[in-house]
Image (cartoon, rainbow, N blue to C red; front, side):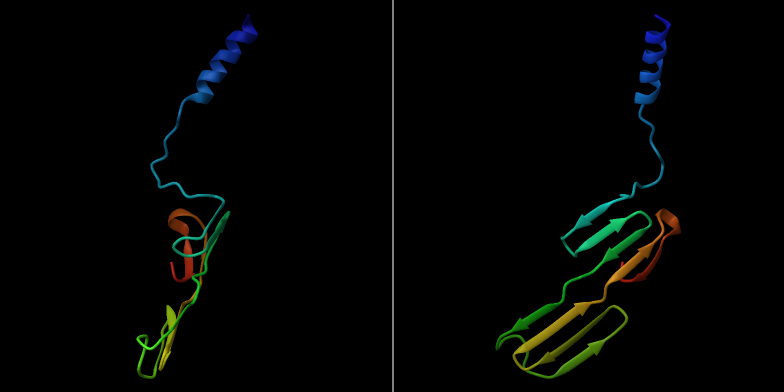
Amino acid sequence: MKKLLVFMIALVVFSVPVEAKEKKEKWFGAGVKPDPTLTIPFVGVKAPLPTACIGKDVSASFDFKCDKKSISFKLPYFKFEWDFPGLSLGRGDKKITLGNK
């Protein structure tokens, strides 16, 4: 009878939900939309896929642009854009992100 009582008390104590005040982050995860992502403990990688367009309405001039977030260039009838990958180290408020978030 004592074992049953102890078991019931333990069941009640461990089944009570506990809420944290901070935003929950996933420990493991993978996704495709909107950008391919992979998450493992304390490391997250976001790798956007490049975009290429071909056609007469795409571009009529030459242009090249490179900044800290992306690279793009245009040729007549061709356009290419690519956002650089991002790497996150840490969790919650103590997260460091290199590249795009």
